[in-house]
Image (cartoon, rainbow, N blue to C red; front, side, top):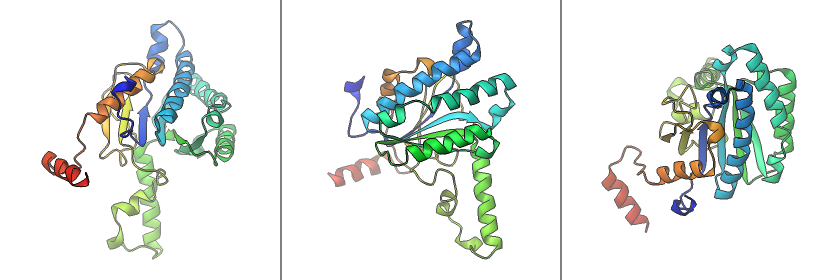
Amino acid sequence: MIHDIDTDNIPQHIAIIMDGNGRWATERGKPRSYGHQAGVDTVRRITSECVRLGVRYLTLYTFSTENWNRPADEVAALMGLVLSSLEDEIFMKNNVRFRVIGDMDRLPREVQEKLRQTMANTAANDSMTMVVALSYSARWEITEAARQIAADAAEGRLKPRDITEQTIAERLSTSFMPDPELLIRTGGELRISNYLLWQIAYSELYFTDTFWPDFDEEGLHEAIASYQARQRRFGKTGQQIDSDSAAKH
């Protein structure tokens, strides 16, 4: 599939909902934690391939605020997996910067400390930024932004008539990066699950039945090829887009 990809039209930001770890493990008669461990191996492979292709930002939905409702033993296993995966040399080997978005205050203290340490250790890396959405939900993020705007308005730093889309975007946890051009969801489900709701307003969506542990470089290439086959109109007509493209050339 790599030969079907236009290397001059690689999405600069890919967001992924990594779904299907538990079901993958259940099909094999294994505990769900086995699937999550296998999913970490997939993260390593996809991260390396994204770096090779020239992707600048890779955002991974790792643990949602709703996931706190899962069985306590699974949550504990996931937190332990976060700690162990951050020991991986993938960040330094691939020159990848590490960032986190989400409600970190809800995480165990040792996990918070390890996340901050990894962010500090990789701050100078610049080939790609991997963003992990951990204890994250889009509604939580937008609510937090609304609270900040309300506080600024109440203290006279911001007038309601001056609030714009940019005002909101600057207060989101993703303000340091562009919106994703491509959102991939594995595992066969056809929903967004409270993920980057503001940011994916014009993202191209790609769904695959493949469980995350089985998602590989070829699967990534297929998703990018699908993205490249689409015409991104942003409200314009196809004719307008063709005319704009012709004018640029």
